Amino acid sequence: MSAPTNPAIAATFSPPVMEARRWLNGVTFPPDRPLINVSQAAPVDPPPEGLRRAIAEAALNRPDAHLYGPVLGNADLRQAVAEEFSQSYGASVAPEQVAITQGCNQAFCTAMTMLAAAGDEVILPVPWYFNHKMWLDMMGIVTRPLACDAAMLPDPEAAAALITPRTRAIVLVTPNNPTGAEYPEGLLTRFYDLCRAHGIALVLDETYRDFDAREGAPHDLLTREGAGETLIQLYSFSKAYRLTGHRVGAMIAGQARMIEAEKFLDTVAISTSQLGQIGALWGMQNLRDWLAGERAEILTRRAAATRVLSQLPGWELRSCGAYFAWLRHPFAATSADLAPRLVREAGVLALPGTMFMPEGDAEGAAHFRIAFANADAAGIAELGQRLAAFTA
Image 1 (tube, rainbow, N blue to C red):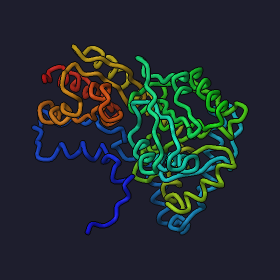
Image 2: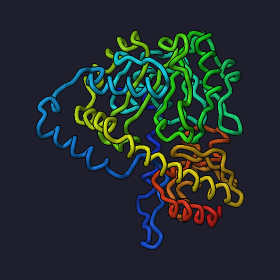
Image 3: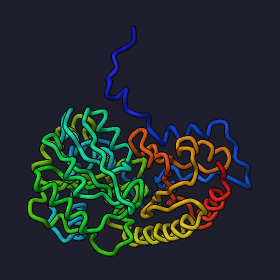
């Protein structure tokens, strides 16, 4: 007799990045043609030395660094995040509106758990970030896919047609994962107005906000009437300060939401890693110029990816920004079938579009996500040459 299994978890697809890594098993790559890994956007380098020293010194000299902290995060980091968002968005954000989470994924899980129960509905633009879909599936929340246009932007009018009495939220990611698209301010305003009119939440995942190509605030939603009831913003320190292993994220929402967030976070983590929070705060206080340099480098790589991928014969670059490019391939086979072959025949590891779309969707079968942030200009050029030479 088999052990009981939660059917919602059993029905959820396996973690895509882990599946892609298995394609490397048994494949060797010669020294003169090493693997080009464009499957994941996480930084591969450690944080700057100063930040590492701050964490090391805290580990050695601060007893509280090894204890439970406040469920919603350390007061000094919440204050710093509130000040940063206030300054960046021209709004007045209080520390009481900030929750520190174990990475941005946990911030998303917190928001969804607060907003929706099994059988409720959440609207996700497609292609979606797969971990968002996985969590909704595991919670028994119904995902309503929202198609994007040719520029990979979702349509508020199409979203309005999907809203039912069970709809609890619309989730937007900008700059987008997986497409890289940066959502215009006017588009975000229309979605905000739509959500407010229907009494549902707008959950805005801004994991990659530090690498937006635009200058200034990408939107003014925090200044709008009812923002505390309508808007939930998510943020990650992982990309900005290379803290992926320390798992530090943030959720910015109305104070009333924090009562519910505290209940959830207390049961799944009790508190976010103390050393991670100490590192994140040190980064915010000391690495502003360094982060500006990181942003400039990512924008340089974005320009290189745009130039190289847009010139591939037969391929079509649909969008490109932050860490990602959304690339249409010219072959009859599906991207799911082509992806393992790219590893073996071209030495390229990329995620197929099928990992970001509903099962059987033709758009997923026709696309790849290219995570170019860890490739320099020479690596991006080599990627282009290998894709151009690949035949199916």
